[in-house]
Amino acid sequence: MKNLKMTNLGFTKVPDASKITRFKQDFLDDLQLVFDNLVDVTEPICQAINSAKADMTIFDSSGIEAFVTENNPKYANRIIKQLKAYAKAQGFDKSYDPYKAA
Image (cartoon, rainbow, N blue to C red):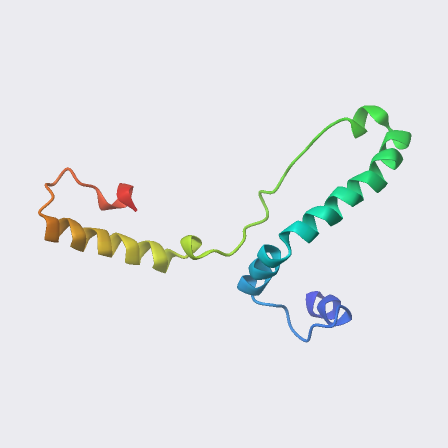
């Protein structure tokens, strides 16, 4: 079903998460303008339907996770390995915690 929807948008396959993130970064100001204008259009409609509910503000972005290098476990493991090597080279004592530093 997703592929069918993406084909209707002109895509032959679902774009990689990094491409979606890059798109968001490249067009952040334009996307903000779209959503600002969307609020201007929908706010009067929502007020007319139910003004009490329209005055509520709810944000739920828990289901959205942008792909970033820091979310990759391989990246975290590489950083921890580097910090362990650095601590050893610098002669840090046992109180140094590379996991906290990472």
